[in-house]
Length: 202
Image 1 (cartoon, rainbow, N blue to C red):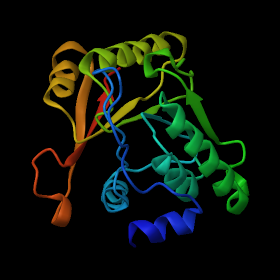
Image 2: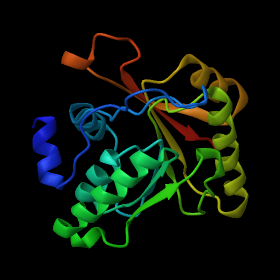
Image 3: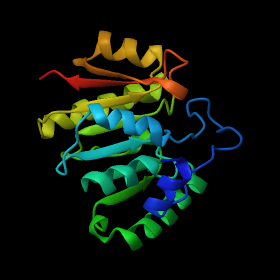
Image 4: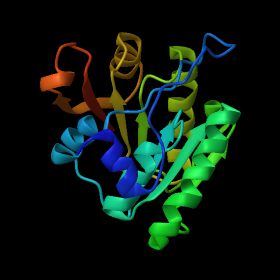
């Protein structure tokens, strides 16, 4: 399906990219993951309704609505841009008008990513290169600290992963590469146009 068709199915509006730049160089502009890329990812990577997904730099919430619609999983979006957060809330209200089963399962947090309190049940974390390595390191450390409260299987899903993210995970953490999902066709022209899934080694 085309981008517009998916948005219509989910009763949301998530097309377009963020205009301008964030004031801090630590935070990158919003751009939604293409639906066609999500189709490829979830052909190879399984989710369950019991999973709890957190999307850091969620923008208008596309990934979250897509996942909740298909798996009825708990989803949380973390967004620091007030305008994007407002659009995400508007999308949530519109989405829930047509998808009432997601009523208590779609949440958004307005604030800095490193300030989000990792829930003991959060176990899948999504990053579309949303911020600098310094912020990423803080969040990974927050995730690791949450393991002291509740040990569980944790995955990090990176889209368009930066070399800095990869180096940090592979050299300074207990995360190990579990899976690589390469994109082809329109999205296969860049070596970074792929998903890397890292799983915490317990």
